[in-house]
Image (cartoon, rainbow, N blue to C red; front, side, top):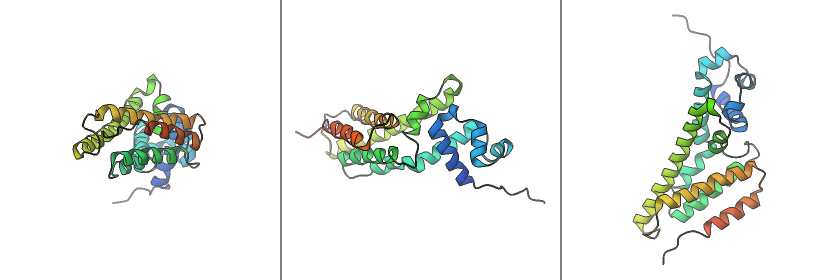
Length: 197
C-alpha cells in the first residue's frame, strides 16, 4: 500500500512557533496567514497536521503549560506552603521577564484579548486558571492538615489571593514593570502570609 508524502516540517518546532504567536498576539490577533507564514506551510497542511485554528491553539496551550508554565506544579511540591508560594512567585517572575518569551502569561493575556467570537477560547483559559487556583488551594488544605498553616486559615481564600497576585504579576510585566518592581509586589504579598500564633 503506498504511503502518503511525509510531512515537510517539524511538528514540535511548528507548535513552538504557534505558541509564541498566540502568546504575543492572542488567539484573535493571530491569523491563519500569520501562522502558516511563520511555520512555513500552507493552510491545508496546517489543518492536516493540527485540525483547525482552535485545535492548534489548544495544542499550543498544552505546550505552554508543559514548558514555560511548568513552574507552577513544581513549586507546589515544595515542603512548606510558604516556600511553595515563594517558588510560585519566583517562577512567574522568571517566566514573564524571560527575554525569549512574549510579555505576560498566555492564560491571562489570551483571555484579556478575547472577544465574543472566541468565547470558547476565553472559557478554556478561564478553566485553566481555575485549575491552577484549585491546585494551590489543595496545597494549602494539605498544609493545614499537616500543621504547616494555622487551622483557622481558609485555604480557598488564601489560594484566591495568591493567584490574584500571580496573575497580576503577568499584567504588570506586560505593562512594562521591571523585575525589581515585581519582586517588591511579591515582598508585600508575603507580608500578609498567615503565621501560627
